Image (cartoon, rainbow, N blue to C red; front, side, top):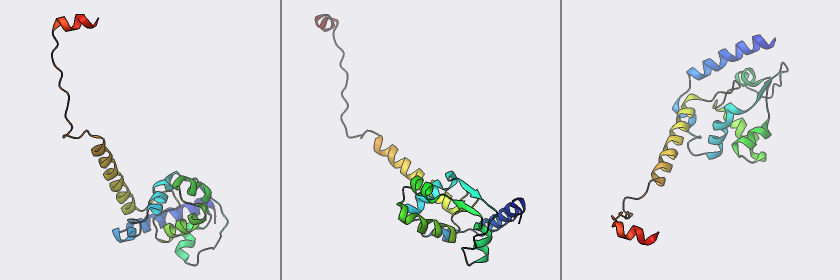
Length: 152
């Protein structure tokens, strides 16, 4: 199948899958930091497309979605800070759960969750960096003009 035709079919399939996304799709993401990091970096990963069909997946939908897609798992592992021996498992899990798509996008509920998590972490950083209200503040006292002249 020509690459242009394959890309059009891929786009239609991704659009169809995105319409059926729900919060239940991301249940595993909530408690898995490695999967969260994989999703966070997925849009930055270089994805290659070829006309060769791998037929590695048994499911027709998965074959249509991922055939001809080549991802550098070492790059993904480095970006997501996931040990190389574990990255293939996390990548396969993210594909099977439709958390990532070969166009470089991620599942919308997962993206909203990650953005919410990031916002909470940033708010926590802001709160932690604010000075405590219980810390006494030194008040400046007014010095007389005579004391200034003694120091100089």
